[in-house]
Length: 165
Image 1 (tube, rainbow, N blue to C red):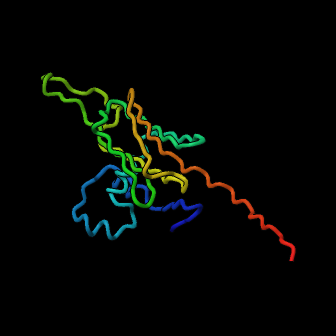
Image 2: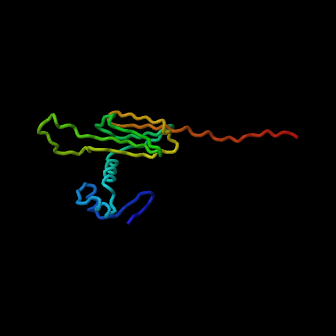
């Protein structure tokens, strides 16, 4: 059963099937099982987890928008910022686990910091200049600045001189 409210789609389905997808439980015949259920695909679930694990702030200034995204431990070269043709700002990258090759016998006792791909998508407003975008990463925080188009000048009525005939 589907419910649609304010462009948010809620799908009610058995809890165990959602958990199977989230945990990547292997199935005997993936194509048959995927077609028989009305579940989100594994790729969709992975993308949703990546988006949920990437906190961001959106700030509006008088002449620009700023998208501030936490990126602790990620090198700027590993971050990709793009503006798609349909006006969507996409920030992607991947956080990798630190190498354990140097220290033999070292193992993780607890691992709470997320590793793997991350992604955030933002719909840009109509007055955003998609060609005037800059990105700076400092102290683990990425700031993407998108300039605004200047507001249109108000139309003034044209005054017509009245002549005597």
